Length: 295
Image (cartoon, rainbow, N blue to C red; front, side, top):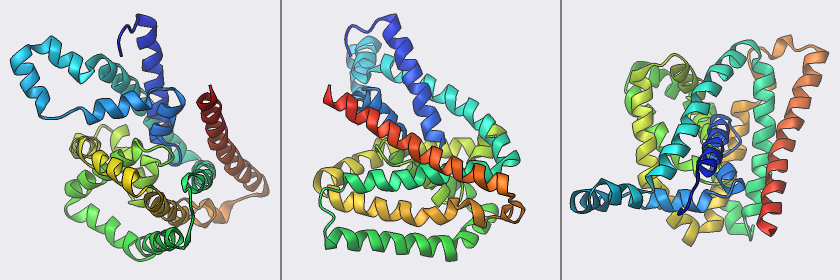
């Protein structure tokens, strides 16, 4: 973007901060925040423009031309905001998960229920074909949650952990740039959300590096696949995502976890209130987005 002033870069930095917070929370997408703050199109265009030709640009025309074609100022400021908020929020959320798991998962449940509603509205024609794809996705998620979860969890503790974390980074980062789809929710589905949060909090480099590398692969590679799918099979793609999100609700259901036997009436009231608050928060963001779209 031409003509950015210092105040514009400060605003961009804080937009990155909010995107980072959103990407760390299952149920809210950093792509949604990018839409709400008016930088989504530039973000997608910039990511889509990163290719091998940039190396030739650097070699033939110098760093200044390369940096301009990369839209480097935009990227470095935005990534700085995202990174700072991710690191800060991860440390906070790690403590909250240890001390208040019932309330945290209740809040996440509200976010995810609202996400189901938002994705459903994005499907323009919910016909029998799209319903079938949604049911298939729900069944796949049920199978993963009830049969494969323990096997995956054991496997990543014993074998190929870095390869699996790399895979999770690819999938999660691809979802992070899709409005309405949460990359952190994908990590919940893949049974590694708490694992990644703890690794980031403890700065476990051997876990962070493959996840980061996978995230870069996902952003630069699979994001193009997603763009193709949305351009050519929009309703089917959203129908599958709807099914995956519905099928993931069991993973965040706060009242069937190990601490659920200790729920008092007061804690149950607070838990339900947080579900409602999380649901309302996503709907508020959606309303703000619609208001901005009309302007």
